[in-house]
Image 1 (cartoon, rainbow, N blue to C red):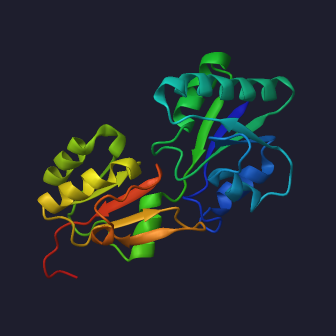
Image 2 (cartoon, one colour):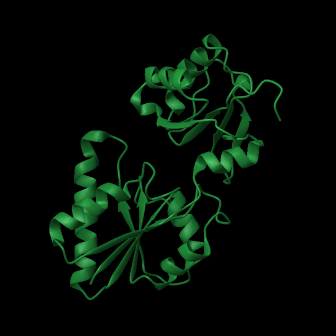
Length: 237
């Protein structure tokens, strides 16, 4: 049976990838890496190439614009189907973070299944997420004891963050660089700015890790930004 494997390669630092993921990338007949610009090396590709020596790595172009998502997934599914047609048995898709957390792999796997039917085995290899990396770099505890943890994308809107702050202890927000000024305003209004940490380009040149309260009020960041708003813990360690 032909196999499609979603491989989590971590948040960007080439050292934050599992042994299992490296083995899968080295053994795959084809490794697809998502990029926004076909002329540039993306985060996933940089991590892959830090660990594999073969030339079976191919870029597939994805887009941030939702109106272009389906066309990108269909094009990538065509690459996978073509690889199987020329004899490949295992195709790996390298994705930053984890393939089951806000990953393009989910849509790609669905598109490939639609083309190939049941003759396809789909599996995933977990990866370290940006919230874990930021928590480690900032010395922030994500949750302890009976605390709850919420993870949401700011593409859902700042109101979704507001609701999460009401119902959960620790809240982590992804994909919110352009909404950062509104997010900082909300945290000030909710008295949750103290202890909040912001991170971008984790493990890469130009990395930013800082208290969210140190950011200028009008500061924006890249799409792949991460914000951790820790639980109110009072005097507990």
